[in-house]
Length: 246
Image (cartoon, rainbow, N blue to C red; front, side, top):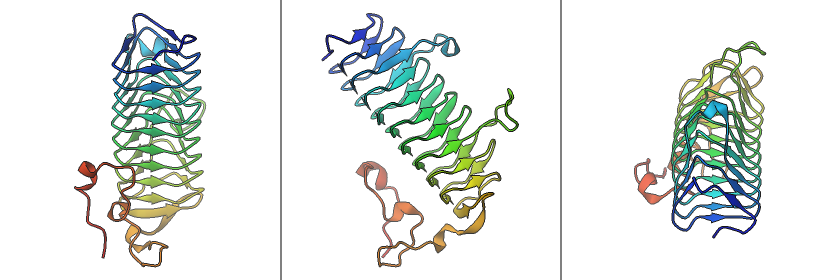
């Protein structure tokens, strides 16, 4: 279960059936849940003064793909899944079934809810707050410094079920409301009301989300997306969502 070339600290806590791939390193202050797979060339629990004595806790049934690095001092719920070459800094607290695409960069000191989906090359700045069932698409950046460079940190806040489309920048302190949609290539400098669509640079109100129709020939509303999209979510979760539109 542990490759001969891997280095695993005797102080690390490994659950049942944990697999550690070639040339990976697991440091002292680490707690890895049952049935977790860590692929090759990963570094897990990288020591950091910013982490203090906080361990890195990884929930059960996790998959961390190759060349990823997780610093000490973060906590993840079960069924974490990453792409390749992910970086996660200290102080990240995430819920169940977070998915991190290849080359995601989480700068730490942030909170992330359950069933959140980050596509590839997403950057999450310190002090960010991401709700449950949020979708953040490739090359999105959540910023935190209102007048760089400075020591002032104002994290963004993304509400439950919101979607932030590709290549968008959300500026420091901005709150994106629940069930909202931020269009691609946007620069969001003002709060986004729940269940609305914004877009542009700077982003402006475009319409309410109910105005957007699915491009599948049915003319059904595309939002809330929970009325028609269930892939990847357990039945126990989607049973509480609205029934699909007729």
